[in-house]
Image (cartoon, rainbow, N blue to C red; front, side):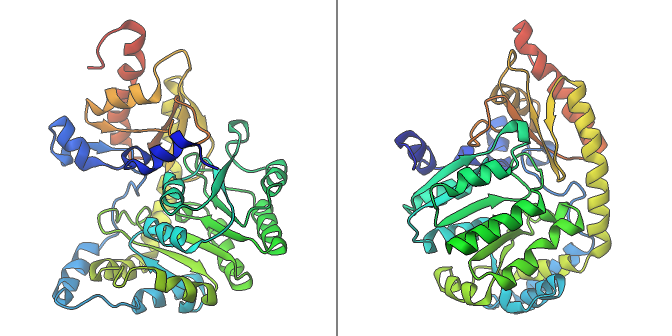
Length: 381
C-alpha cells in the first residue's frame, strides 16, 4: 500500500514523473524549443517516417467532421500488423490515456506493480483510489524479474500484476520463460496481467511477437503498446491495447468518445506501412546505443544493459546527483532524465535517450563539465 508521502507526491500534479517537457524547459531557460536537445524523452532518433507530413496535410480536409469513433481503418491496419482480428485492439490518445482508462476500470482488491515502472501507473492507480503495492526488482539483475522475484510477487496473491517489458527506465527485456510463467500463474489464480510494451517496437522482432498469441488465449491479459515513441508522434499521441475481444468490449465504454483524433488515426495507418523505416530504426538504434554506452562509460558512468532507445546510467556516488547533473545540462540546452523518482532507482540514476552521433557530441560536451564541476565548485559552462 502507498504511504502518505508517496501518495501526496503522486497526487500533487506529477510534473516530475515524466521527461519530455520541452515547453516548460523553453520557458524556464528562455530558449526557443528548437534550440533545445531533448534527451529526456525517449523517441525515435530518426524522427518521423517519410511521407508523414503529406499524409497529415491530406487528412486536414476531414477536420470538419468528428473523428471515426470506432478507429476502424487504424484497427484494420493493426490487425494486419499483428495477424489478429480488429476486435483485439483498443486505440487511445497515447498509451497513457489507456493506463488511465484501465485504472478507472480495475476495481480490484490488490495490484502488484513491478518496479521500477513508468510513473503514470502509480499515479493513475492513486488518483482512482486503487490499492497497490510495489515489488521492487534489483539493480544487480538489471531490474529484470528472476524466479525468486516471481515467488515473492505471488506471496500476497495480487488480483492484478503490472510489468513493463522492455523495462522502464533500464530498457532490458524479460526472459520469455519469465513472461510465460507470469501468464500461467495469473491464469491459475484468476488474476489479471497487464504488460506495458510501450518500447517493444525497438526490440528484436521475436520479442515483439510474444503478446499476440497470449491475448488470444487468456482473457485477463492486456498488453499496452505505444506508437508515440517508435514513430516519434509525441505531439499527436497514439497508443493501443491488445486484449481478448470480450475484455476490450467491456473496457471500451469506460473510455472517452472520439478519443483518437483524425490526424492521429491517419498518421497511425501511414506509419504502420513504413516497413523500411522500421527496419532501419532498429538497425540504427542498436548501433547508436552501443556508441552512446561507450561514451557514457568513458565519462565514468556505469550503464545498465538494455535493448531499446534509451540508456540508464549510474553516476559515481561520491559525485553530483542525477538531479544536479540534469540541472547543469539543462542550463546548456540539453535535457536528460534524472531517475531518482522511479521507485527502485537511486538519486544517482540518469536516463538518456539514444541519439545520433552529432547529438552525442553535444551531450558529451555539456555532460562532462556537469559531472566535474561539483568536484571543483565551479561552473558547468
